[in-house]
Figure 1 (spheres, rainbow, N blue to C red):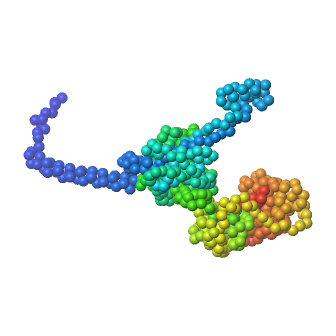
Figure 2: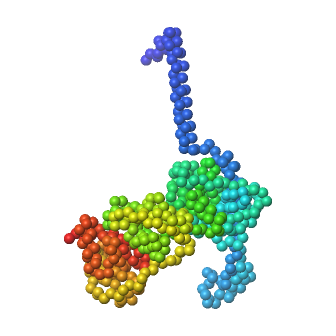
Figure 3: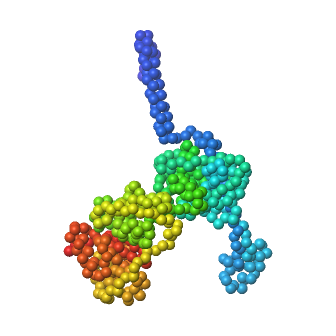
Amino acid sequence: MKTRTDEEFPLRPQSHARTFDTATPLRLFWLGTLSMMLILSQTLMAGAQGAPRSFAELAERISPSVVNITTSTTVAGRTGPQGIVPEGSPFEDFFREFQDRNGGGDRPRQSSALGSGFVISEDGYVVTNNHVIDGADEIQVEFFEGFELPAELVGTDPNTDIALLKVEADTPLKFVNFGDSDTARVGDWVMAMGNPLGQGFSVSAGIVSARNRALSGTYDDYIQTDAAINRGNSGGPLFNMSGDVIGVNTAILSPNGGSIGIGFSMASNVVTRVVAQLQEYGETRRGWLGVRIQDVTEDVAEAMGLETARGALVTDVPDGPAKDAGMLSGDVITSFDGREVEDTRALVRQVGNTEVGKTVRVVVMREGSNETLRVTLGRREEAEGIMPTAEDAPDTPDEPEEMDVLGLTLAPVTDALRDELGIDPSVEGLVVRSVDETSEAFEKGLREGDVITEAGQSAVTSLGDLNDRIDDARESGRRSLLLLVRRGGDPRFVALGLEED
């Protein structure tokens, strides 16, 4: 086979070389322009997303305002060898003597705990979690610069797990400001600082993973983050990239006690209101409307003829501000103080954040039309524990007959049933004697002993009343009937589908 050589493939003529040389700079120009455009685009995108090149400058600026908190608590000693031998065992005296020789016995001992916090004013106010200092005899605050100061407890709010401390310093302290947590978006960068596992001042970074998380409290509004939060971080701040506190690190979700990237910080817009009240009063003062409520579900909305499943359905109105203003059981609260009410959680937060003694407009949906009530709020802390009251119910003749309807076996409340089931003397209605376990009623939680006091938002005291309410609902074209059910004094609404004739 013949091998081709350079002679057989001569170089291009010079004229072609000149043409190539002319094109090369043009191509390089366009390639360079496209590269610059790509780099600029990436830079703009990074800037829009707030991605920092480093957290070092931010950490250096705000570290002096973050503190470690150490508490000391006196714990009563054990009175015997609990957990070692059974009570009354012949070895009990032996183990008690062993504990006494080794410093045990019933002598009190000191217990310590670690947490985090942050300074919010130059005169020494410090925010942390309530569970960090709960029950503490002494509280010591360690600052980033290395000095320590004793702290006094100003006030606490177990509902949001927030506590406010005060230290006295010779010079103004460095502090941080609260930011607007409502502006934090899922995906925004955040930075957590604190004292994880007692390791001292530590920084972790991540993003906002979710907003408006609720754990177990009435006023919960947590920011979820994947910034590493561990034991000891409790009470520490969660910063945005401007160095403002948008959350107080409070809890983690973890099967092993360590960070798995699911941490929760109480939103700053909740914390600031609590802190302001603790500073002014040493306690919280939340507004109180005085109603029992439940969410409006799709079936409840259909049973009540509502267009949308939103608002808060009033199940009971005990003595209090709402009752004084004319609110009734069965009203659906759709607006409070000029703001729409989406659900019960939103209403509780709106009421709690409103000042005590303020007169507000509350819009309710009642029997298909809107009504506006003017309610002067009370104080929740004073109203805690108030239960609904009722006038003595008139005597009614016994009605021993039963009826099977909607998957329920019902009978009118009688004196005998009151004694048998412990029904309050003031409660009138129909007692659930049994529930078909294959029925919708069973699926929605109705059980033997429940008392139905209303149907179709009208009182029912006899089986005939219930039949009338069922007929009315069918004639109006509704596919379900709304029942007010009481169990142990606690009311709730349940919508049950109507059987076809």
